[in-house]
Length: 71
Image (spheres, one colour):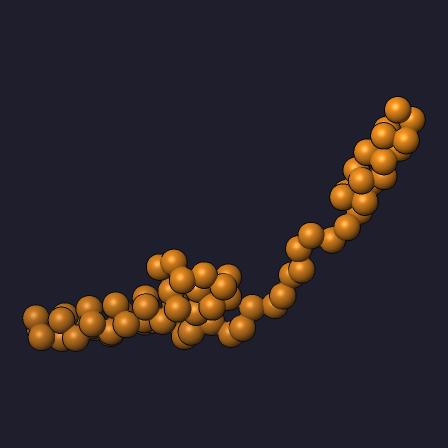
């Protein structure tokens, strides 16, 4: 009984003292999207496409950083 308690205590101490996560610095994120002034509907469509592309770049960058394929 004493050995079992000692073994459980040792496992508990080893589990609490070990490093479980390693922090890594992130790579440089994509540039921030700054929309330009929109005057026509064609320019609005163009800016919308640019913004969607920029969002996809940020999603891809984030997925690489956290090692997932979720978007």
